[in-house]
Length: 267
Ligand SMILES: NC(=O)c1ccc[n+]([C@@H]2O[C@H](COP(=O)([O-])OP(=O)(O)OC[C@H]3O[C@@H](n4cnc5c(N)ncnc54)[C@H](O)[C@@H]3O)[C@@H](O)[C@H]2O)c1
Image (cartoon, rainbow, N blue to C red):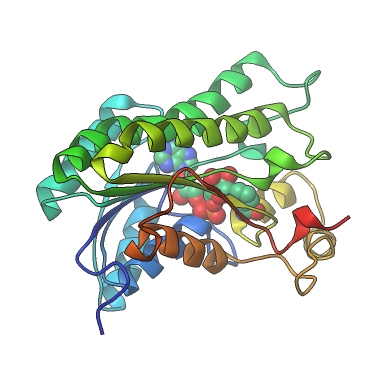
C-alpha cells in the first residue's frame, strides 16, 4: 500500500531538535513524513542535529538529505530551497517548524529588551515567511504544494506571559491565511498547526536550564491537559501535520488547527 505522502518531496525547516529526553515536533514530523513515503530534506541551523534526523530516516529505510541554514539569513534559506530541488527534483511540502521563546530571552512587556524583541521577530516570524518566499515560485510552477507553519496555543492563552512569542505566533496565523488565499489558484494549500502543551525538549529543557524543577514542571503541564492529564508528544504534532500535508486534506487550506488535548475548550 502506498504511503500517505508517497512520491512527495518535503523540506523540513527546523528538522533537527533541541537535545533532550523526548522527540521534538520537527524531528517527529520529518520521521513520520519519511515513513509515509516522502523524501525529506532536513534544514537546521544546527547541522549535527539535522544530520542526525536524516540518519534516523535512512536507518528506518527512508530517503533523506540535510543541510545547514539559519532562517534569519535570506541567502541561506534560498540556498537550502535550491539545494533541495537540485537533489530531489521538486518540492511538494514545506514544513516551517522553527520557533523559540525563552531561549531567545523573551519577556513581559516591561522586561523584554528591544534586541531580544527584534531577534524573536527575525526567527519566529520573518524566518517563517522566508522559506515560503522561495518555495512558492517552485510550487506555483508545479501547480501543487502544501505549507504548514507551526504556531502555538500561546496565541489564545490568557496566562501566557511573554510578548515576543505570543505576538509572533499570532502573526503566523495571518501570514498563513495570506499565503493560502493568494496561492489557492495554484493548488497550493497553507495551514497553521497550533501545538498546545507538548512534552518536547524545546518546552522543557529551556525552562529547566532557567531553574525550573523538571518533575514539578512536567507534572504542572500534564495537569493542565484534559485528555488523559498528559501533555502531547512530538508524534501528535507530526500526525496532525501528516494529515494536512497529505492529499486527504486536499480541500483544506487557511485553517489554524488546534492540537492541544482539549485544553482550550475546558474551563
Ligand atoms: N513544545 C511545545 O510545547 C510547543 C508548544 C507550542 C508550539 N511549539 C512550537 O513547535 C516548534 C518547535 O518544536 P520542536 O519541538 O521541534 O523544537 P526544537 O527546538 O526541538 O526544534 C527546533 C529546531 O529549530 C532549529 N532552529 C532554531 N533556530 C533556528 C534558526 N534561526 N534557523 C534554523 N534553525 C533553527 C533548532 O536548532 C532546532 O533543531 C516551534 O515553532 C514552537 O514554537 C512547541
